Length: 281
Image (cartoon, rainbow, N blue to C red; front, side, top):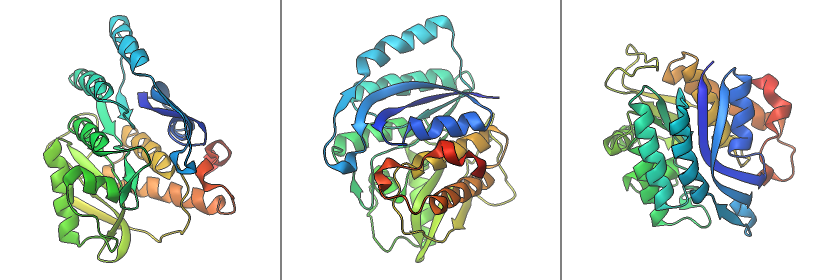
């Protein structure tokens, strides 16, 4: 059992973010803790929302945890709302990393070629700061474009361009990277790149090349929170001793089956009721 800290926003009216990740990681046998970056009324695509940042709470909490000697085997970070939050979290992650803690960064910013409502270039810079401390980061294609400055194209990339984008993400500072919701040579897929060096605490398969690509059949349903589900399964599998490619494949399979089971749900912004679907893990 690993001790995992989730640093992300808490959404009141939806099964996304922490609400999606906590039950999955707990079901996988891990002990999960949380540090909210903000309290959000509902997902942003409803058009109206209320956000209360928790920067002051974070500023006071992290020193207390340090004084108490709390330790984590892994930290997964999500949405950041201010420069101070990004600095606090990146500094905290660096200090934990020195003690062997694995740092996973989900650079939540946008999808479909655009930033989410309320996001701007400042958020992009904050996410680059977070990615610079990551052992693994897993942006979607849109987020990877913003991180690297490479152009978003609806038709996607070539395999050569996909490898260049993965290299550019590692150039920011991440040690490994996975890009979701990609389209390579016309085929929906997830692409990844392992580290060039050994990584303590994470298993890597050096017999399968530096890069990998896993194709999938696209399901035309835009559920919110599927990225959080993917992240949770991926992290749980990695911390359980699986390789990056196998963990990625398992996360993709779980997301696909969850979407298929809940395809008749009317409001996709609510996300997937993961507690009712843990048998699919």
